[in-house]
Image (cartoon, rainbow, N blue to C red; front, side, top):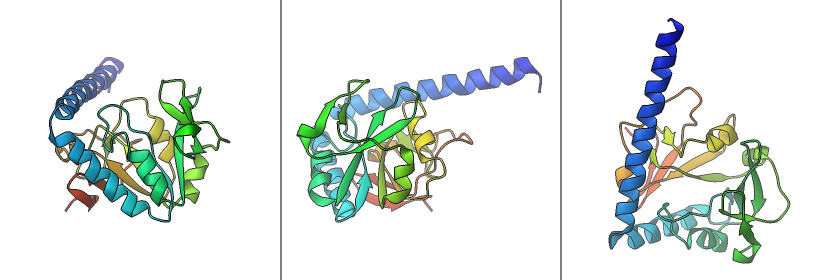
Length: 200
């Protein structure tokens, strides 16, 4: 393949992913304005807490229209043995610290609430029982689409801990593109419940 053709293919993939992310973000914002949004988040948070009961888990603090809602992290904290949240590292790597209640959070580099306790690198994930992973969408094969920075793909590389990706029902989509570096999820949690991946 000549260089011009190679870079043209790369650019086309990048633009396609960018368009899909824009579409997914707009659809999620529209869903957040509906009466069904709060009930969907409540269902996701309740099932996540049930799955996390007594376990050591990694999770995230949902922002805005992200699945799980504002009470998600606190709901997990009441159920799990430990909850670890991500911290955006300067080098594009995720670090992790234990969530010890809302008072343990402070705004991080990206304006996201991050725990202030001692930090661990992503090798921690191999020691945990379950990882709750945010996404904009996931394919039936288990390929997730994040926001494009690659934080989770890097963090999950080589980790065998079970992963549960959180999206809304309409975000399980056939058109999520797959790249060799993409982390593949073990299961998906939506407001309709948990399904193992890949979907049969």
